[in-house]
Length: 418
Image (cartoon, rainbow, N blue to C red; front, side, top):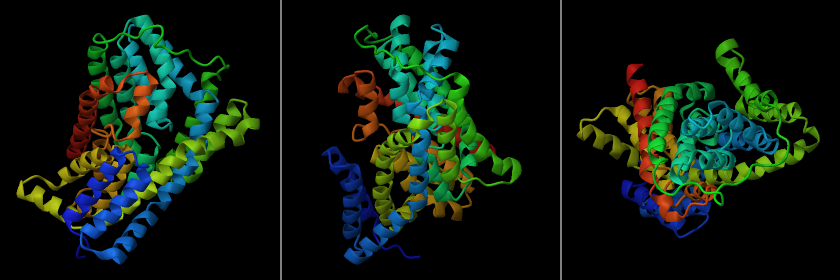
């Protein structure tokens, strides 16, 4: 199929979206505007631009529905105190001596069970700051531990980025989550090493910097785990018993299980509404992402990138991690970056003989390298969680990128071994 838009146009569209986000335009609108710029600059005309932008947004609908459904689980885990209980149990079990590792593992687990990565950091932050104050650790070190743990948990979670990537490659969600277990462990190891080194340098956590955890009674650990366990069991039925339970069903059922196990059934609707408020922004972002993906997918970009790799004598599979890195950096979002890369290059990777699951895993891991740039919300939300100023937050980006790169290289290694 002949491309409708030029590579230059698609690139200009992505660039326009980035500039508009930096100018503080709402990201979904910035992406839509970028799609319009990309289509018109790419020479496709207004009618073709609108047709492909709408088609790209329509292609996001399955992922959007699953993400909206996941709000029930996210709301339940946060509002019942389950996420905080799980995090506290992990930190308490490992103690001060392994404080950095404990904080990283706590954030990994909270994110891996279905809480968004930025919310995972915000959830763990009060506990982490209290531990860091007692263990005399720096603000930068403890934040990097949470961010790195969140990155590791994010690629093995039923979160929007995983759902959208699995949808684009038409692979089982559980299989994609399992495929990145080793890259997640590699990211965790890199996090503990880098955060442990950084924790002894810079401004230490002070009394006024730490925040108290909630005074509300938390559920028991077993009750807190009921929701995530339900989701894991339901999703595992496909590989274990050949029974397919779609995430659209499994994720809200996990939320219901969490609400019932913690005895908050009267507040169930309120918790679901809270969860919806947390995921609706991501769902809208994906619609905007779909418009750009539609333009990029119909452009000569994927062919030109593939040709460039061939000219450089690089193997075809390199397209997967590289596209994940670049698109996530362009959008400053793991979800948007992984989605655009997966939607745009899944066909090219398949044509080159790259297995769908391997390609999805490499793109997904690659999207964690430079996804936390300042034109995205994650950068500001995580800095605010520990009261860090923007200059100090900027200095963490190379460390975050290193953690994501370790994870990506591990994903590539797993693909090559298989």
